[in-house]
Image (cartoon, rainbow, N blue to C red; front, side, top):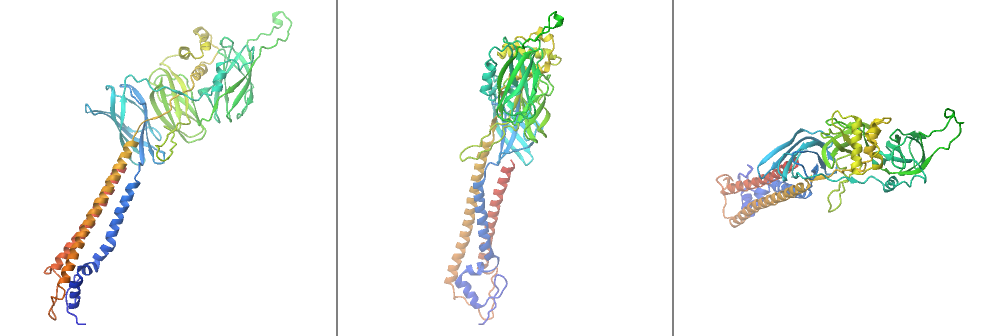
Amino acid sequence: MPETPGKGPDGERFTQEELDVVRSAGLFETYLGRGWFRNLIIYGVPAVAALLIAAGIFSSLIQVSETLLLYSQPRWIPGQQGGLRVAIMDREGEFVPVTDLEMILHDRTREVSERLVQGEAHGTKAASLAVVAPHWTDGEYELEIRATTTRRSKKARLTVTLDASYEGEPAETTRELGIWRDHFDSANFMDKGAEIRVDLVPEGGQIASSLPNILYVRTTNRSGEPVAARVKLALAEGYISGDLPESVETDALGLATIIIYPTFNILVLQVAAEPLDAHVPGPEDGEAEQEVPARVSTGRIVLPIGPQGIRLRPLVPNPAVGEPIRMRVYSVGSERVIFTDLYRGDLWTDASGTTVDSQSSEVLGPNPREPGMHVVQAYSSPVPAIYQKLPGREPELTSCSMSAAHVWVSVKGESDLDSLARVAAELQAAGIDRGYVSHLTREKLAAGGFNTGRTIAFLLARLDGAVHPPGVSASSRSSDKQSATSLRTRIRQLVVIAFSVISLVVILAFGFLTLETWRAARTSGRTSLPPGAEAPISSQDPGWLRKQIFQMSMIIAVVVATFGLLAVLVMYLRWHIS
């Protein structure tokens, strides 16, 4: 077959027969059947389409990765201090440690803002602190929170309410068992005719199983007046670790303490008490020595036991204003994060947190700033997360492993005896143990013969049962869901636009080539080259211009798809970082 030299698009020579084929077959085989055009169509377009499809699938999988939670009272009092805690919970329900925190309160109506907190966050897995609300009028305001974690930063805008008339949330009494309360409030657990009443009062209102517990032993007469007595103890039901003391002697205020380690969910003690002042006549009385039957009172006492994970015990029941509350925390397990809250009345005034590294650790609680009755409580997390992934339901957070105790915050310079008298007056005003505290007069207290700290701790233990379970007052979950939904929508829109642009460019390019194929078919065989002449496909040839247009169209399609994917990536990163 004779060869007529001609120059092709890649510099090769075309014969006359090949040029006729180009004109008859069109430009598909010429431009798309060789070189990088073919690879672009075969590999490039499907690859870009696959990436766009993957972006669309990815958008449907976007969920809320982390949620910012604000633990505080539902209302703040203007100008007063309140405790709060900021935590960030990941998708698995675990708290991510907060390292830095910034909180700004905005009044959008007056265009006024006040920075409440800025700097390093003190706490463990959550930022625990106290803030002073500004002296603004009552109403709703916007709180902007920016928290930095060990992974990334998180910011959210939440609504808080200022209310000058707010008095706090009422405490919940959930730890006392009815059977113990029935026994304690009546005398039927002591045998008929008993002259001495024996009360066993556990610290915190309930004995915690598998933890050391202080048990207050109190002895009074029938009118409720304290008497010193010797009390014998015997285990009737249940199990304890170690030995139960055979007997204890109560002091002038009728008090003594023992420590028990129960290991079962029921504990019943048999008691027998006799007064210490029982006088047996002897030779010094001018009488012959004789045996006098002892006045023994017996009874059977049922004690409450609960499966608590921790036990909180204030080491000083009456700390002074401005001094940290020294506490000992007993834990069933070691290496636990412990959060402590301080309440004055029903108002949350301060918060702190620490990590205990053993089953018995001494920790410092918040610093009380006002005198009076306070409740300090500890628990193992802000609201220990039980993250239940149930269809159509929000995650549920359940409180557990809580322990609380009352403390009397005294003014500086106040004596222990004055603190004791004030605590007794608090119980008298509250109608608690009136028969007993009515005998704690100044004259009786001045006589001495008792342990002041133990007596204060016992009276505070009579105020047991008041706990304030921590609750989430605001959460970014709703706004996070809206952001995730918006992001998914924008990604899908970009995918649709990118597909549309690519499809339009490809349709135009192939339409152009189809038109050229039809034109080449009509002119097939009408043009021939003289022997030995060259048929260059160059800028002189209209086919060269069409080829360049097609190349530019394909390049534009690839560029559009690339920038579309980059836009999706940038939007995702911006959302994920914020």
